[in-house]
Image (cartoon, rainbow, N blue to C red; front, side, top):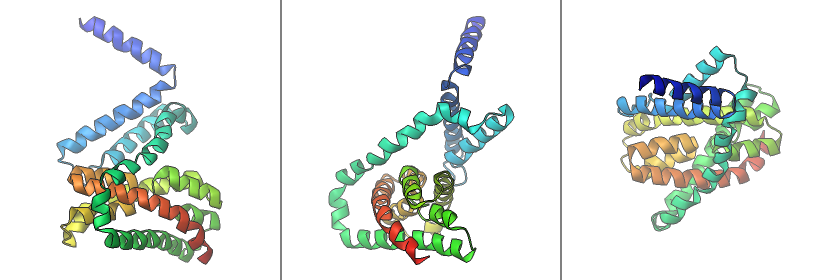
Length: 242
């Protein structure tokens, strides 16, 4: 029985190693592995599945001397799904429209304040450090989900790949910091906690919010969707200040 199982596994490995599916499969396995570690550690903020999975993939790519182009040939299907996933953010907004409209004034205030602060703080720090204009333009949309951020960066003359890295770094930082920070600030309203992390840390922060509380996750998803649309409008205007 073991010989049959080993033979089957070997055949699967031979097949995958000769197709782009190898890196798609590797990515999925890395995330499943990372998520299991996160669960065992009771979803500790530092045990973020994205951080762990990214670290595992970096090690594998380094050891195997695999180029990014080769990796992306297989993993691009996951990249493609970012677009539909972004559009699907309209679903929680529609389902929870009464909750949003009942808090419309604080929601709008938090959305505008958070979006403007995220953009201006990034631009101000970059300007203070005397960064080149293309780097500044890459920094500006760092707090929205990757497809939107890369699109904004490309249209403005930034570097989309750099923007993607900054978006991921922002999301991971927010996901790690959100729970301890909210606890220190004694913010107990899960809708407010979720909305804050959704604006600041897009999808990765939203995933963390859902792990904490369904209401927090819902409002994080709503904030993520609204902030993506507002940032696309604000960034072209605010970058003119620098």
